Image (cartoon, rainbow, N blue to C red; front, side, top):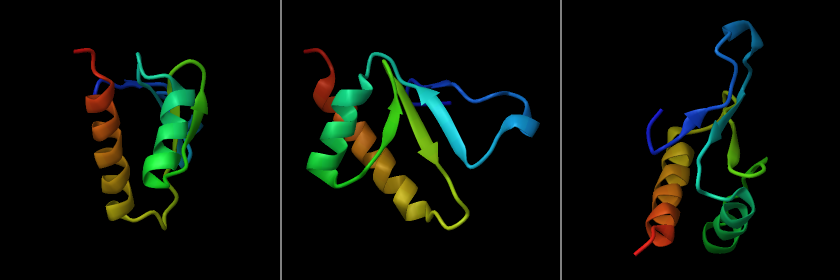
Length: 82
């Protein structure tokens, strides 16, 4: 999956939809939700402790995905242990 993520969506295509979930330990969803909104005005949601839900409707633009990924990478680099 990349970026240290683990898929949390069913491997069965019949059970998938436009919402996917990934587990991103040790990222804490509450912290990244707040940071994404405060710093980037990107609203995300997830589940405890470290799952992010990604909504990918047909009208989502590639530039929006790229913006999220850049913000995610920035967050991870800021939160890495020294």
